[in-house]
Amino acid sequence: MTADHTPIVPAAGSPILVADIGGTNARFGLIDGRVVREVRVLRCANYASIEDAATAYLTAAGLAAHGTPGRPRRGAFAVAGPVTGDRIAMTNLVWEFSVGQVRNALGLEGLKVINDFTAVALSVPRLAPEDLRQVGDGTPLAGMVVGVLGPGSGLGVSGLVPAAGGRWTALSGEGGHTTMAPVSDRESSVLAQLRKSFDHVSAERVLSGPGLINLYQALSIIDGREPASLTPAEITDHALAGTEPHCTEAVEMFCAMLGTVAGNLALTLGARGGIYIAGGIVPKLGNLFTHSRFRKRFVEKGRMRDFLAPIPTYVITHDLPAFLGLAEAAETD
Image (cartoon, rainbow, N blue to C red; front, side, top):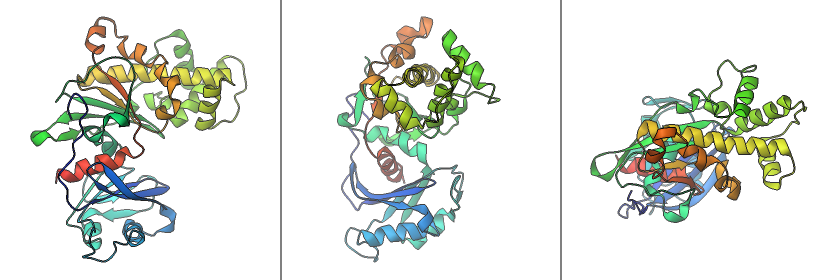
């Protein structure tokens, strides 16, 4: 990845079979470089195994028969769960499988299986300018460490470290479970309220879909109001429309706290290559996020302000970043 975000595009060849597999849906597609096609979403409950789902996809795409022109020879799958060896057990799905057996069953020469947020992190080298929205100032330094955060159903945190041959290695950790620290008295009150329900108030407890609910409910209770039963999407809708004050404050606090955590990540990694925000929540906030306290909080680190100010922060707007990351992972084989 270069400082002007020129994406890596490998030489033309057979497409890579990619899949992003969650607890409910499995998204399959074919990818050549940055070009994603034949995307289909299959309900996991309709298939007994990952082999069955992948075979059903290849059949629907007209690529089930071996030797069919355009049939993928390699695959890369992202799964919602830990990946520590050949045997994979998914966190919220009954599927268990051997990577080697699935590779052989699908007739692939190679199959890479990685954690779903690792795939999102690995997408960064393949992102083009139109896949990003910069928030605030700063310019990335080529070949430097990159930080990635992804508020969604949880909070994914990773980093990208330059490797040999112009490739990148994604760090695997559980940074979303670090302790959330308050910056203001209002945040202190919110975290104190949440500690009544949780032994440990991590960043994920506030920076995720469920975290938005936690923020909204805590703010309402602190102000003596009975919180309504709202989904994360309803909270953000109210905030965007300005129709419910505590929803608006919850989203604003979410953005500010995300800036705090993003700044911590940049300091920890020395992420002079930039900080990238992924996940399904932030892109939908649009200008509300751009004009929020996110960037202000990002650089508010006292005497380290001058270190953080040149580091750019971006929102990833690509619809399927995990597919790009899977292609990056497959290319390293």
